[in-house]
Image (cartoon, rainbow, N blue to C red; front, top):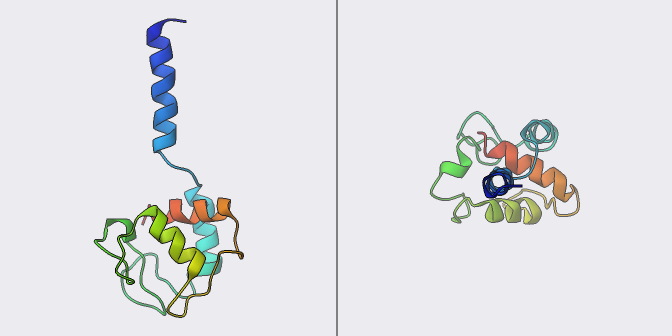
Length: 105
């Protein structure tokens, strides 16, 4: 194997890793079942909870924290302001899917 082929393989793995985890299509399905009752996906307008369109492009979430993947996951896990805790209600792979979906909004 040449150095060039090895470098290409490393770059492909890094690109796949940077792309993130989770399936946005599966996240959309879960969002429609669990989250859409309280959150709009196609608007920033408040439903029961905040609208989530453009969530990851905002300066801050409703709780004042920056909308990083870690902070969004923490909010999903911990709930708050009327939102239930999803820590034990959905698995990590499902949270990956929902976060991947939220990043597409």
